[in-house]
Image (cartoon, rainbow over all chains, first blue to last red; front, side, top):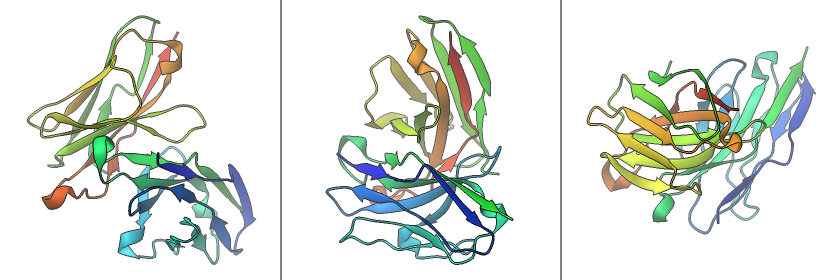
Length: 112
Length: 116
């Protein structure tokens, strides 16, 4: 069964500090991974997906198949980055085709 | 804005009742997925509809059912409500193209269901 684990429920950093939100996954096939973000009082929205290899709002995430990880990183955190972050894995086959499996989420707080 | 609209935004029901939640989109996204998000948890996949048929299902009992209409709007129906069904229900729309590849999923703002 596929699974996504975000080991940190809460993460606090100061503005300008580097930030890394951890995500580990288990999946038998070739994984397609995403980071979603939910700002206060806003809906869940896609931050980035690994196949696009983009940097969005200064965030990057590298898929490491050996370590089954997809950590989200930003070198210099900003206060507006404070939000809930979810790592998600797409099921590309079987009876649950199209299913996104989410981790439990990490609340990032960036202090001034 | 994603153009994905869910209604109602909040709902209170009594245990044993039935509920219908709705999702519509201004765009032509042909695939709709429903998720349940309990407090403090990540969203959990209920099922997905593509071309008006169920296209995938998570670990939810049959009393959770859905519909997708020709205009791609969708309903989530839950029968015999239980207290544990209290959660935020999210609708996500995407586009399934060739080779069954999904585009990005756009989420609605959710319906907060409380079962008392």
